[in-house]
Amino acid sequence: MTETRDSIQDIWGARTPYNGEWPVRIDERTTEEPDHWVQSACVLCSNGCGCDIGVKNGRIVGVRGRAVDRVNHGRLGPKGLHGWEANNSPYPLTTLLIRRKGKLEPATWDEAMSLLVEKSKEQLNKHTSSAIAFYISGQLFIEEYYTLGVLGKASLSTPHMDGNTRRCTATAGAALKISFGTDGQADSYADLDTTDAVLLVGHNLDAAPQQAPGRLAAGPHQAGCPTNAGSGRLAGHRRVGGRDLSRPAGLGSCVHS
Ligand code: SF4
Image (tube, rainbow, N blue to C red; front, top):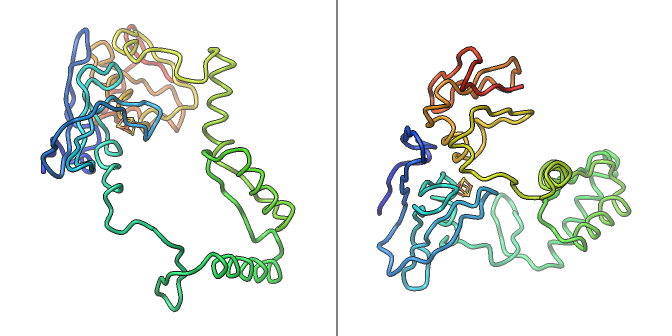
């Protein structure tokens, strides 16, 4: 196995201070020696880091960052480095399972749906429809949202239905379109290399995937970044990369609001 770092313990990896262009650092994780590499991109978050997929006998056996990719310059985060391993799980869920006396056992659709109805009725009778809530993915198609709406509202009459669509994807897309005319990131990541000031509003950069905070924290012109301008949510920014980076706002500082 090749592993350039243990990204579970060391999320961002070594800092790569720079002046000018963010240096290349190729992160890699393989469980076997690949026969060949296929150019791709990690799709586990909207950064879309460029990566090569290592293939052996038609199966993925590893990933490595792409040095020429403008987003990550070879770096990959824990999700990118590890997420693919689930594809090779020896225990894929191939059938419905019902837990009986603490043990998961194969079941038919009829059995599973009957159990769902039985348990839902039990909750409705015992606690009313307010005892049932739906928290739904943001990645469904409209027909699926419609079906869930019928189930939750028309059938179970719960007032508690919410989805990741409202909290994440759709709101971000709508806000970006109104502000910048595009529902994707409007700027280039290379801008982070040369910017003198970064204004973060209601955004916890420190908890975001590694590329943006890593790039900001490593740049010499952001040596004082970020400055905590008073919001409790921003306390994490002062600890980017484990270093306390706060200093009074001035030329070259990042000011958060
Ligand atoms: S930051 Fe991580 S999850 Fe997001 S695209 Fe890059 S490697 Fe994948």
